[in-house]
Image 1 (cartoon, rainbow, N blue to C red):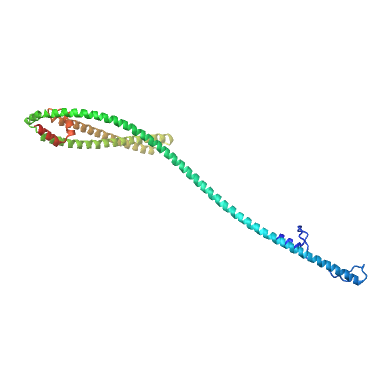
Image 2 (tube, rainbow, N blue to C red):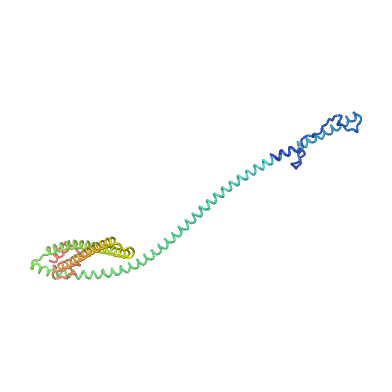
Length: 326
């Protein structure tokens, strides 16, 4: 705006801002008699000269006005150009801002794509590891299949052996009739034998349960004994540290009392474990005696054969077999 004011003030259109001229000349057109040129003696001559000068100055003034109008048109056209340039610059700035926003969005998208690519890489690594594990499992399954085929062949051979053994046992069962008749003569019957056999089976299950409970108690007592030993060792270490650093009688007494109590508890648990082990041994001896009694009930047949028959067949089936042999 200051540039436009300077150019409007300088009607001649000079580029120098310091040389400012007014729009109209300051010269007085009409001069007084005192200010006239003394070379003119006649007043008419002087008036003609003044008129001529005034006309020439008026013509120059009109010329200056035309030049000013052209200059204002040029200045207006420059202002329009400046406005257009401003609008273009603003459009360019808005485009630059839009491009910056697009660039930011693209950066964000690139960052997200990079993160997704990293996640995909991690997933691919996991899948590779899982694939390797599956391949190892497939190899193991193939090895297990080969082992199972070998076991199947072994089982087929064992089945043939068992069939032969069954035939032998059937022959022995046919010979069992004679032994049964001898047992009747001695006051023994099959029903009594099978009843005793069932009772002994029940007692055997009860004794097995007791054996399991006692074994669990023994394990618990051994663990407690180990824990108490560790406590005793820790207390001994504390006593040694206290004796080295600040020997105080009261603390040493308390620690010794704790040590004695822990040792007493340890001895108590040791005695309990010894008693439990004795009970377990007694139960094992009872089981051995009962098994020997069980197999001594059936005369004329070996204990192993009777055991196999009792495992493969129930008590009712055994009764039916014996009756059919009778």
